[in-house]
Image (cartoon, rainbow, N blue to C red; front, side, top):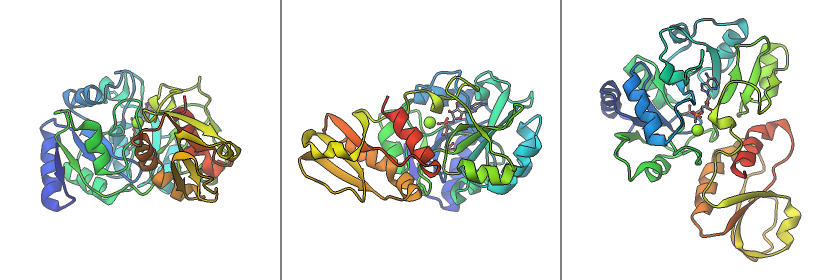
Length: 318
Ligand code: TXA
Ligand code: MG
């Protein structure tokens, strides 16, 4: 895998690789994506092979602008138009009825397609240069932690010859995956919480969207009970459990929690959900490497601003 910069020359090279059907990892504001030409089924198939991802799990298609929506979506309800206008480019994916021209390999055989205009200048520049939709799941092995730096991507795929290049756009701003909103049913529903939370969606929609339960809604791998997981077992705990020393455990606590000593590693993250989310995956990767038998993560607050972080930690703990 070669490392490319965000220079015009390197982005031209990345666009050429995509045109040839190769896989290129690219930065977005949420996490790094593993990109292929969304109009080339053979290229898209390579994403599934590289990740070890089941073929019936649909991919998100990234677009350069809102105008491109109609190339992919067969029907664009008012709610979807409002959300796109309010939050794109940004960390929001809309599930819409697909156009017949959209290949089954992209949608996992479903009649709907996930679409988003990412809010990262490098991703946007590449999309504009490439001129077509780019299919990209998070650039990690299936079920593992999403990458938020180019080095994370290289660590995930270094033994593989399946990924041609990674574009280094620095660390991701948001740090957890986009909010996914399903606009295909009678009510608009959140399928995956993200940093655009229920309150902000409600302000734009004029009503509070529903939050889909585990059983409902189309398949979405990010909604599997176990996902986003480090290799080391992860447990969510209350801060009282830190009163008992555990030399085999690595701890991820909130910054306000005092280190009582007696742990293999002690790492803290900010008490603000936006800053916490930005650093979460890098922290989990770091603690995963420290040789602990378990990672104890302090349970974050039960408020809606923490919904995305709580969701990822709960899935990582199963
Ligand atoms: O922030 C993000 O969304 C990142 C960046 C790279 O854009 N991408 C990402 O992709 O997280 P991935 O594949 O790791 O997760 C996308 C989720 C999956 O859970 C997938 O099943 C769901 O989106 N999805 C895609 N198309 C869908 C559809 N038509 N219906 C329901 N869920 C869909
Ligand atoms: Mg993923």
